[in-house]
Length: 482
Figure 1 (cartoon, helix red, strand yellow):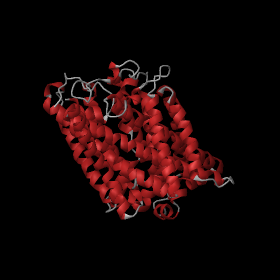
Figure 2: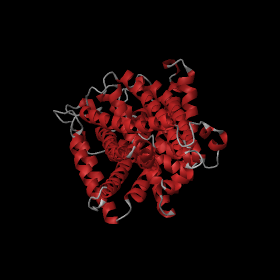
Figure 3: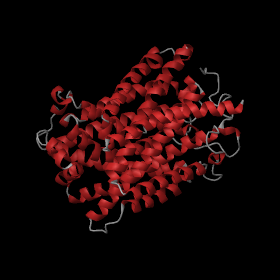
């Protein structure tokens, strides 16, 4: 087990060379708290979650008690963040999951986590390309435009993301900040309209009553709430590009959890009230696609509905750009540790971006788009569902292992943090709660993927197979250096 005085990138890594040891392979930047929050919250696609996940939860989960799923997940992720943030000053390398897990459990475990994170965010990015293409095609057709294939819009988004990925992360963070403010702002307009007009049946807190919350299907609510939070922890991925990371990363992590949790819980509650507790489940079941949009039209008018339509598309674009940036940096980390070709460690001399890793990530995404286009499957149900299944389980495995890393690290270095709650108790509690969430995810895996049982089984095994591969590959690479 590594100690606090042992550099994270020291001998024991494949090659034993930290990224910064080679000129032109070290990332730099000036990302502040809000810039980091913009990046990670954009990855959660908050407008899309309110428009999609909430309707599905109301229809298939615990009905009008759906907002509690977001509150539960916000609490769990906050508990996770305590150990994560407490350990941050002792992890001096970017890579988030990779760096934290390696610091506690060694090189092979860290490498395994890096590969799993890379697969998780890459898979979800491909899924969002499908979601974006399908949603944009439907949006254009709804305004009388031509019926074009989803993959055409996906490729257009891919071109823009590929170009932006080569520029400074500061530029992307500003763009994501603008898009995020638009998508959050439009939902706040709906929230305010529902509050002002009193909802369909009055402003009531009955949706939080135990009989609505604690139903057999509450696991579905927790699952869909969880899928809306993927990426919140990625603040640490940008450690080298943040100013004063020991303060910026903790603040951004807590800020992202609080923003996502409060925003999701309040907005989903008000969306239920927009239809009324007695009608919401029926409406979500029969009109899941229009659950939010029709509510906007009822309470704020047709123009605001059209604006929300536009922001749904930009929300998905912001999401795929953010996921691209996160996956790119995991690829950069793996290449820096010599588990991927060295060409992916190059940093742009002008923009300071990991541009070759960005292009590599774009190449993978393009292959995914082409494969799914040839398979001629539904971009929303089949592409996004399949990739979201892989990403959700991969995300949970990483969170569990990272929580255990914080607990194990401080167990072996008790003098580094005197607060036992922050260093030992809460990380272990978070790991147990997240393990329960993983069990829920696997129990409802077919609900996420919307795929046949055989296909769902294969997809469910992808994260586990990646973990095994990471251990094997790291061990093999280390033996090759002896």
